[in-house]
Image (cartoon, rainbow, N blue to C red; front, top):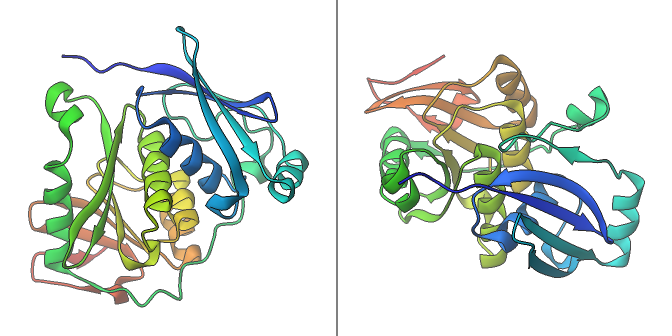
Length: 250
């Protein structure tokens, strides 16, 4: 089996703002999460309505904002369109690409080494689409003592994270209570989106970029990556991680 992907357009006030190639599922989560992680809204209740329209060749998601959010959106309107999950494509200036990152340094959450290893193992068990295709990314939310409480999959890593953000917001899950866990590498936009979600932890199977590390440091975020078996590296803010003998600070 191979995964499907389809164009998904986000339209605000009747005008297309973004077009992403994405897995055809979890559209309302996607719309809410994208709106939150891109700073279009500050809170879920700033969205008045989400309407999903299937046009055959693609999906158009009409998002109606309440007055204050709509005013804020109009002030920063831009067109974004790109390939699979490309969160930066279409941004018209360096300033927009490197927007200031939300600070999460006040978080008191700490994780044991076993929590980090367990989070990746548990995420692998809640990826039905990946099990069938071997070709999609996943993003999950791990809470110590509870495991992976929410997960979403998509052909694009940014899309999976946006869908997770929306699902967490809809469920009313406290984003400061756990860690974002991803099956991909960690680019700067993954750090930006995790900070926007409000989690002080991002845990990844693959490596981070240098800019992602610098941005996580600035945000006060603990970035853990290269999780392989019982081994992993902590790249930023290691004070939140209780290390075992197999792990070390990068």
